[in-house]
Amino acid sequence: MFFLSLTRTFASQMSKLDAYRVDLLSSKLQGSRLEWNLDDSFFEAVEGLIHRGNIHTTVDCQNTGSMFRFRISSEGDVIVPCDRCLSDLELRIETDDELLVKLGSEYSDEGDCVIVPETEGYVNLAQFIYEFIALSMPITVCHEPGKCDESMMQQLSRHQVARSSQEDDEDYGSEAGGDSQIVDDRWAALKNLKLN
Image 1: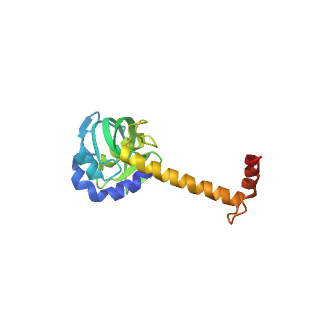
Image 2: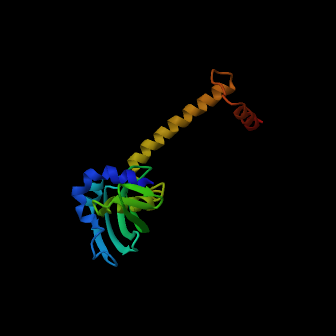
Image 3: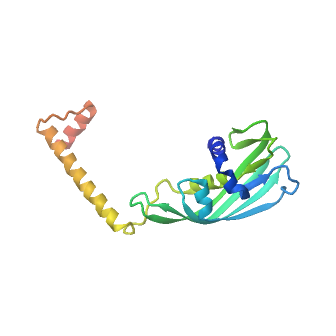
């Protein structure tokens, strides 16, 4: 599970994000609700793909006796680079996730449950909140058609035209008996269908 490696790499950032540290041994934890407004400083401290944002996060805490159940809901906007033009893009975020935590002898995970050392007795939710936000984003993040940065789109267009011309030249060379060879016989059969 991705949580374990994130918890370890996240240890060096803990001091900046101590506000998201939850005492699992506190008698006040059961039934409590934690709330945070995540701003640019949060995303800078986590050091992920999202660098800016304005998100309201609530965490409802339950202690079932054998484990802790955190229902983490986040709503707001993040600023991420557009995959097409690399300009800033505002993206709406709404998440509703669950994190299960158990106390144990050392850090580990069991499927959807994270184990934290009983000697420490706390979990820092910052990285988990960030990951839930990041996982809620679509795989491809692009501006709507016509909204991308014009200068970048002109550059992309020039490169695509140049690449397309080069590919056409290569195709012509192979049809005319040039040096290019088709590696797989199946491609040769498909190419013959195209020519006929």
